[in-house]
Image (cartoon, rainbow, N blue to C red; front, side, top):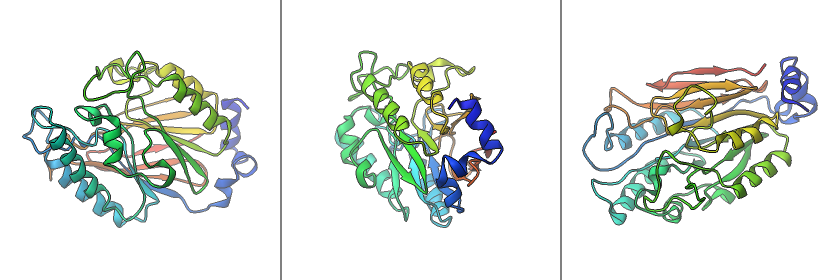
Length: 297
């Protein structure tokens, strides 16, 4: 079924009942917390980045999340940073501190890998010092389901030769999703027709007017896969600290505003996302994060 036909049926209120029964079965909206780009480190501010304040901002976000009856929370990468010079032990200490705060949420917690998460440690180091629920634990890319909705997390932290980001051996302007992960993504979408949300750190909407340095270098390949599968609703991204939004062929691309920007308590950025039974998505932004209604039509 082509995407335009799929979306036309959604707008008529027909398809979720016949093809995607999960929406008609669950009358309770799915709700999750969203944060990105904390860059936590115990070092002094640089320009608009307030590294130390991120743990205070996260505590405030967790307080809101814990009182909001959420199904899970997810951070979209660049979870931590490093000190003024690369130091593996110090960086892992920063990661342990911010992970402990994140895990104070009273429900499942998921992670997405960002480029700064491998600034002076390995990808394996990051995965060993963070915890995802169930089969997602220890994985850089994975999928899971909640209330009949499929969630797919991607890892674009690969160099042009498709070697993995590792202890700063990368140019942040060059990010790739390697072929084996593209094949995995195609398989995930071909094998499951449930409504699907995509998470990753770097941006996929290079087709928009955003500058290309913040986008996945082979984003066109990823987007082509997503657009072949009409169940894909929205892509949530980080990396571009100002935030961004675009839409093409029935898929919303929402880039979250970074938490690290500007000092606490005047500034913060986090959100609660609600996926409604008819497929509409409402993102309630807090503080500097702008709210967004994303309808399917």
